[in-house]
Amino acid sequence: MTRTVYLNGQYLPEDEAKVSIFDRGFLFADGVYEVTSVLDGKLIDFDGHATRLARSLGELEMGNPISKEDLLEVHRELVRRNDIGDGLIYLQITRGAADRDFAYPAEDTPQTIVLFTQSKPGLAENPMATTGMKVISIEDQRWGRRDIKTVQLLYPSMGKMMAKAAGAHDAWMVEDGKITEGTSNNAYIVKNGKIITRNLGTEILHGITRAAVLRFAREAQMEVEERAFTLDEAKAADEAFITSASSFVMPVVEIDGAPVGDGKVGRVAPRLREIYLDESRKAAV
Ligand code: PMP
Image (cartoon, rainbow, N blue to C red; front, top):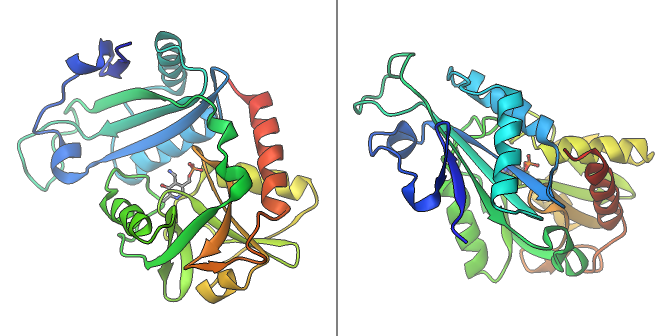
């Protein structure tokens, strides 16, 4: 089946959707994105993603070319047209096409908006949730505004390749001895029953899954501490895990080749995963 994608107001077969070579997303990575998961044909945490999108655009002084209501409708229409049960919807908005110049183009330059689906049957039944994942640590060499969800993903991409070369699944990035986050996820450790994750700031992306998981953890009377933690602390933790829209909650059982705790999936991550999946399925739109 040819995928139907959305480009600037039109639903098109994927091979007919074309963007200018002058698009600033292509030339300057001058664009932002969101990834929303779909379970049983419904959108998970849509409101959070739409709200963060508006914030990213605002931080970059970019216009918002689509209302939240219309955005929801486009997401739903793509789910329908592509018959998505479980999967992901990728959204990207750029500052549009203009002759190459570092200065932003005129404000009335039409922005580019693209959405496409990725079908992932069984997205919530990833076997890694029971076996756990392995991460390596790498230096965080990204820019300083990681709270803005821009499409400049080259360093995270390099990080994934470094992880792959080391026989691991992902990399946790370290700055001044402290973990910032994973290449495409937020990072957590558990010590003596307490869930510890980096506090919000410009150093990390404000994960939508992170916000939901921390809320559920607190509602379940679990202790949460939002602060930076070191790589050494992570290696000495009882448990570790990540969160993201595409992996939900995923246990980490190895860091730099050494087991976390007893090297097996612990109790906290699976519990949070279950609560998160249950609650978000109920609230899905
Ligand atoms: N940090 C980074 C660097 C990411 O790329 C992502 C996923 N986009 C996350 C954290 C997790 O964010 P979310 O829960 O909103 O998917």
